[in-house]
Each structure stands twice: as structure tokens, then as C-alpha cells.
Image 1 (tube, rainbow, N blue to C red):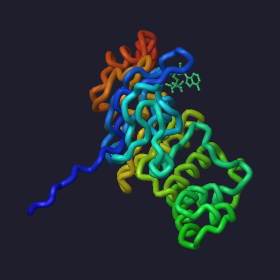
Image 2 (image 1 turned 135 degrees about the vertical axis):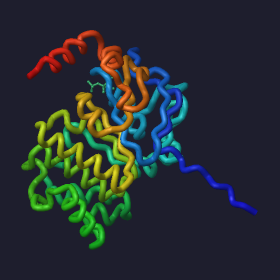
Image 3 (image 1 turned 90 degrees about the horizontal axis):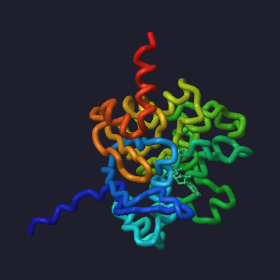
Image 4 (image 1 turned 90 degrees about the vertical axis):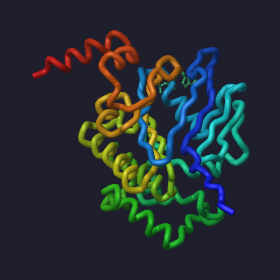
Length: 270
Ligand SMILES: Nc1ncnc2c1ncn2[C@@H]1O[C@H](COP(=O)(O)OP(=O)(O)OP(=O)(O)O)[C@@H](O)[C@H]1O
């Protein structure tokens, strides 16, 4: 008898998700799917709901009661505004990267990267800092991969923003994250560091098939590194499709009339 072939579960599946903060709607019935191995830019004006969406997707916050289900790799994260009981296990499959790097400043970069493996160890080993040799080897390999191994022994707080951000990505590698959700990872970085971080995310997506969802303020970066864009406007999906089809007029619809001036100014620059 032929075996049933199960389709691979989608990496992120959100159904009719709404979120209201003290009476203000941040997300209104948002539904989307991200396939494993995609690299998706989440764009839209300030306050359009990008961070809220990413946090709900990772199970860091609960959606409103009455919302549909959110699943990662076929596992329930939350439904009807309640986190599922297994949410920690599901969350462990996602590396979350924040604008402000989120490393522990007073310990070494190396220790921060090791922390990525905490979920894989029995609690007491992690608490005592007893990381097996194999994990320590993986931590150094991850630091080499992101190009900052020579800084391993430095306190995280002594590193530049770009180095800290690459450290956060190395931590996600040690975590063996299957997806990386990056919330404005380059907003605090200079253009050279920003490019490095985006190149790194694109490389991990390409070489390791890590699913990447990245919120970006700069549309140019989205165009350069992502094939698909999801645009939010006032908590609703205003665009979901190939980045190449995001025309100037569509962008003006998303960002408002003033965006026309931004584009025009850029066009007349020598
Ligand atoms: N913790 C919170 N408490 C109250 N309101 C919040 C909270 N977080 C977000 N909001 C509100 O929800 C809406 C969406 O915010 P969100 O941060 O998700 O947007 P965003 O698109 O990520 O914005 P930005 O690009 O400026 O980071 C905004 O009106 C914001 O003020």
C-alpha cells in the first residue's frame, strides 16, 4: 500500500489574528503563511503592527481573544488569544533578533552564544554553566561563521552594535533555530554593519534553509535581500507578494502620499 505523503508543514501559519492595545487596534484579522526556507521582509509605516505581528508569531505575546490559530512548523503557538501549553518547545525552534541586540552585556560574547543551547540541556547543567564540549565547539564555530570569533572573550557590552547583532545571530545558530524572526535588526546600525547583518541573514537562509522573517524600515534593503514582502498598513495586510512587484505607486499607497516626495528626492539625486 502506498504511504501517504504528508506535505511539509508551513513555517509560520497565522489565521485571523487581531491584537488590541488598550482599545487601539494594532492588528486586525491578519492571516498569512510563510513557507520553510523563505526570506520575507515585513514592511510598513511606523506603528503599522510589524513588531506586534512578529511577537505574536513567536508566542512572546498573546493575540486578542477570538483570534484564530498561530502555528510554527505545524505546532500550535496560540489559539483564541491563549498560548498553547507546549509554546516553549515551539519557541525554541525560532531565534528572535531584536533591534537592541539583546545580549547580556556583562558576560562574554562566547557565553552569550552558549546561552543559545540552554534549551537543549537539562536545567541544572545550564544553571551551572556546564556546557558539553560539543556545544562549546558549536559556539566557536557559530562565532567563526558570523565573522567575530576573535571577539569571543570580550564582554558583549564592549562590542559594536554590528558585532552584537552578529553575536545574536550566532546564538540563534547554536540554538539550532529553524527560523529567525528579526525585528528591525539593522535600525541601529551604520550602513556597512547593516549590510553585513543582512548579508549574513541571507546567507543562512540560502545555505542552511533557515526561514527568515525580518521587519525593515528601509525598503531598499527589503528589495535587495528578500524575494517576498508583506506590507502592513494600520494593522492590516496592504501587500503580500513578490518584492519585484512592489511598484512606486504601491509603496505610496502603503507609506502614504509623503512617500512620493521621498522617492522623488532620491530620483533627482546626482
Ligand atoms: N506594549 C504596548 N502597549 C501599548 N501599545 C502598544 C504596545 N506595543 C505596540 N503598541 C501599539 O500598537 C501599534 C503597533 O505597534 P508596533 O510596534 O507593532 O508597530 P511597528 O510597525 O512595529 O512600528 P515601528 O516600525 O515604529 O516599530 C502602535 O499603535 C503601538 O503604539
